[in-house]
Image (cartoon, rainbow over all chains, first blue to last red; front, top):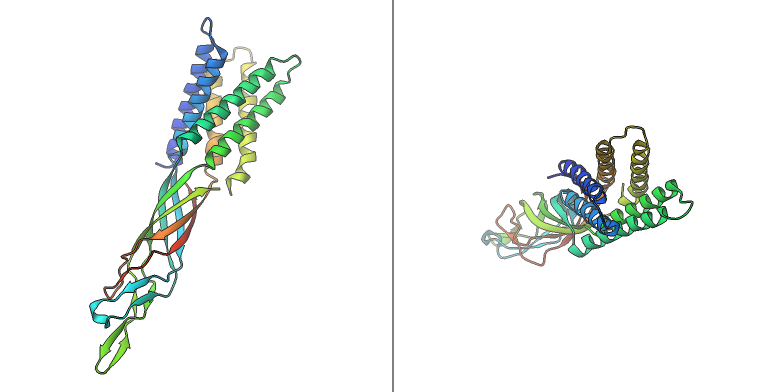
Amino acid sequence: MPLSAGYPTLDSDLEAAYITARDSGTEDGCDPDAIIAQLAEDFGNAVHIYMETALVSTTIITPGTQMASAAASTAGTPGVYSTPGTGTGTGTISFESSDVGTLISEIETAYQDAKAAGSEDGADPDAIIATQAADMMAAVDKFALTALVETDVTVNPGQAVVGYMAIAGATTVPVPSVSLVGTGAGEGDLS
Amino acid sequence: MPLSAAAPALEMDIEDAYQTAKAEGSEDGADPDAVIANLANNMATAIHGYMTQALVSTDVEVDSGQMDAVGGSTSNSPPTGTGTGGLS
C-alpha cells in the first residue's frame, strides 16, 4: 500500500502511544523511565510500520551490450544488443531490525534528555522543545536513510539486436532484430 | 527533493507540533484527549510530508534469457543499469 494509506495508521498509532504514556503516568508509583522507554518503542514501531508501506517507482536505463545466442535461422552467428534499454521498476522498502532498535533507542534518548533538561532550575521550555525536535528529526532521518530498496524491473521491448546473419545462396545476409520485453531486479537506497 | 533537504522542515514541523500541544494544554478547560489527538496528527503529518520527498536510487541487473523477435535470447552475464525514482 502507498504511504498515503499508511499515514492514517501512523496517526492512530502515535495517538495510542501518547495515550498509553499519559495513562501510565497517572498510575500510583509509576516509573517515568519505563514510561519513556515504552513511548519510544511505540513511537519507533509506528514510524517503522508506516515507512514500510511505501511503494517504490523507478525509471531504469540499461546500457544494452548483451550477447544473444543465435536462433536456428541465423547461421549460428551471435547477436549483440546495440542500443540502451529503458524500463520501469516497482518495489518496496524494508529495514534491518538493528536499525529499528537504533531508532527506538535514539527516540528514548531524546525523551530522556528533554526530561532531564526540564527538571533543571530555570529550564526554558522553548529551548527544550527545540532540542527535542532536533533530536527526533535526527533519529527519524537517520533511520529513513537505512532503508533497503528492492524493485522488480520490466525492460521495454525494442532494443536493436545486430549481428545475426542468414544464409542466402552462396553468401550471408544480416538479419536485424529487436528485443522483446525483459525482466530484472533492482536494489538500492533512499536519499 | 532528497531527504537531506526535507529534514529541516521535518524538524520545524515537529517543533511546531510540540509547541501547539504545549499551548493547547495550558488553556483553561483544555481537553487532554484532544491535545493528544492533535499532537499525534501533527507529528504524523510532519513525518509523512518528510518521507514523501525521498529519492530512490537503484542498481539494476537485467535477467539473461531475454528473447528477441527472431527467436534469440541473451546468454551472457547480465549488464547492470540504474534506476531513479521516488516513493508513493
